[in-house]
Amino acid sequence: MAAPTTHGDPPQAEAGGPPDPWADQRVEMPAHEFDAVAYHVGRMALGGMHPPPPSLGAFLTADLTCAEFAARLGDVLADLAEVLARTTDVRLRAWEATRVVAGSPPRSRRWRGPATRRWLEEGLAADGAEGIIVTFEATAPADVDQFLVLNVFRFGSIPGVLTDISLVAGPQLWPGPAVDDAAEQVLRLAESWVDPLRILTGGITYDRVEGIDSPFEQWYGLNHATRAGIARDRLRGYHWANLLGPGHLARLGGRDALLAAAAVHGFDARLLSRGPGEGPGPAEVLVRARGPITAFDDARLAAMKGFLAPALPTVRYSGYYGWPLRIVKDPGTAFRTVPPDGPGPRLLPQTPAEGSSSPHE
Image (spheres, one colour):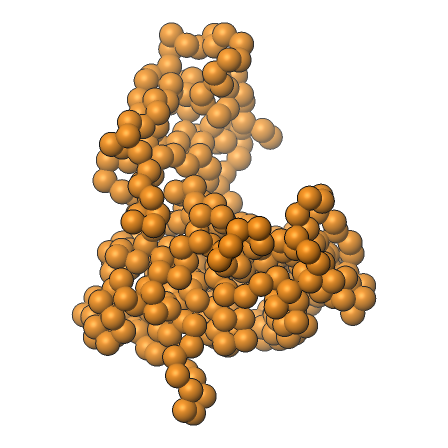
């Protein structure tokens, strides 16, 4: 059942639109002070809808082009199939493929084996290629939330921009304690991709994940074009497990200092394994919370944010309207509530002093 929309949803009428019948009942407040999550949850509850359960997600950034990813697609799909076979009794296989080329609408087709993989590879190698989506689903009737989605995206028209790679699982693919082992397996997979996919950074999380954006990026409205241009020295959030490259390490005092400081803060940090005689890879260090991903509580989340803060993008919160995320709110943000059965507030734009900082600062 959908939530009622009597008072308008989202809670602010657009400028230039029809007169707002609730104008005299709306509370006025700065946009960054409004707890839009509480309002959204309350509105959905009025219609009988409740927050979805969390699921496992991996959000990585790679220093390679779409054409270069095409040459590695077969290995990536084989790696994913192997992880699925080790971590779930549900039989999944590649089910649907989508490719995205600039100037054309996305094109999708059912998976038909090697021919579909070649079709994706051709799309990735084409001029204007921007990415692909591959969905793994059960071969037999199963829970609708038992799936895994691979997203690969890059704005090729922006010089120097990097490639975003995400893995998003359905909430019931790895239910209950099964997600703990799955998270370890996905982390090992991400580590194994550091060299062949030139992974610069990334994180593994258990949250309400979707698409190509990490929860941190959803919260702060960091789009691909912005974050993929700064990922060499800015992280994609503060997660249960985090991959750090040279630029991130430099912002955190250097590799040796970070390795020593992690234990003091209660985290494990180690150099990523390399072949004999090989120098540092694109990502050099793993920082992770101790224990399984389901034990990564709010206190550990806040500690991880504080530990990695110098390498996080320096953007200010301006508003997020959706289901709750594993986020530590910045002071003075998202704290003013509005009854969900009444009209939403009139949101004031931020002043220049309150406005978003450049993520490059």
